[in-house]
Image (cartoon, rainbow, N blue to C red; front, side, top):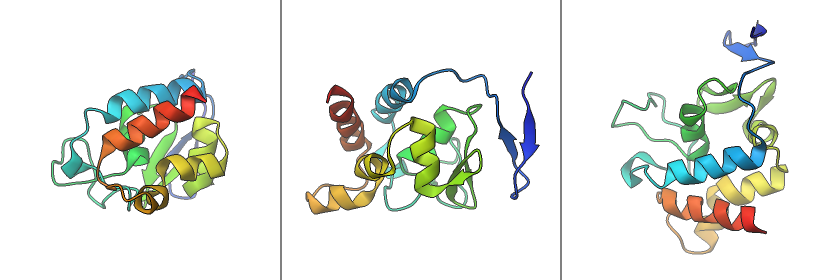
Length: 137
C-alpha cells in the first residue's frame, strides 16, 4: 500500500513508491528512452513547457521533464514547471531521484556544459550519450 501525503502544491507525494530501481538503473533507462525523443520535443533550457504532456506534440521538456513521464509512479513530478521529488525541488530533486550529487546532476542535465562545448541543447541523444559516459566512469 502506498503512503501518500499532499505537498504544499496539493500534489500527491509518494513516500513508499513501488519503483525499486537504483539511481544508476533509472539513469540507464532514461538514457535509452531519450534516444527516442524527437529533437523538436526536447529542450535543455527549460524543465518543461507549461502545457507539457507526452501526447501534446507542441510541448517540450528537458531530460528531467521526460523522466517524469518515463517514471510515472516514482514520485518525480513537474509542478509549476519545476521538478519535485518528495519535499525536494529543482536540482536537489534531480539529485535525490537519481541518487547523484547536485554537481553531477548539473553536469548531466543543465544546458551550460552542452553550450560551453558548442553542442545543441535540443539533442536528446547528446544527453543520452553523456549519461552513458557518466555510468561507465
